[in-house]
Image 1 (cartoon, rainbow, N blue to C red):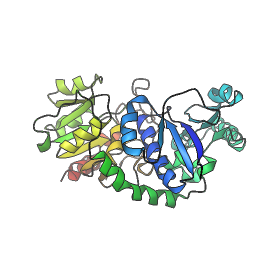
Image 2: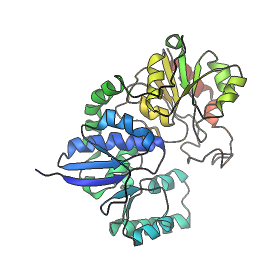
Image 3: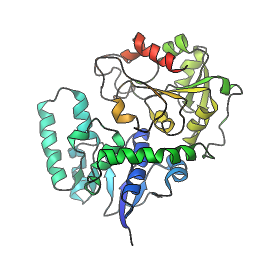
Length: 340
């Protein structure tokens, strides 16, 4: 039987968002095998994605916009208007999540909700139902598409769990890594930490120095903030263009700690000797139901909060430069206890 083709443009969004979509479309492809899903992703992710998902998904080359293509977007309707007029269609999973996480809904939000509802009704923007807003974001990303709304959340979760062992096995065998990648000689005896995060989930250097001074701290090789850790006497290690570097470093270590940033999404499917720390986003939204490592949830009253880039917004929604979790004793104790 000839499969129906679905073209997905997944170039927009954070790297963790894109990984969650891949995992989720992989599950959907098993539940609806009559549909061929062709998905375009950033170039740096393609080798790892092909290694992991090519038995069900087609990782497509970037090309001119297909007439039937659906594009992920984080823009508001004003930013999408020109594209809609020219015939483009969009998937907007963040719209409702952002309004939910703001906690206080303003008049302009009601106007925005109404406008997006009309766009959804007209089939030019696809939205997930409000009832799923606290569920795993990967489901929000696929359940907005009318083609997949018949898949219940429980069916989706069951498939994620069924897929876990296969994905885990692939990510633990012969993954693509950068030729520049090097491993510290004693990494197997040490903890490795991925402290990165473009917003307030970034692990402060004072916390790292106080609580885990012997650990290795892993940074993307272009990340200038690694120098701050080095200046404070902490050991650093670099990963490079291939995202498989993150997995390879983690698997070589005694234990891994990651903030709720891009590395955590790869580690949820590749390493069970891992602690993920929650700061901004609901754990139910960014932690896979199949994750088998350890999770340290937020302990502060202002959680959840919106993702605000530190370089553009010096403080969080509550007015702090650093997430209050890092100064919370219970939060710290839970991280340190997870290491045993």
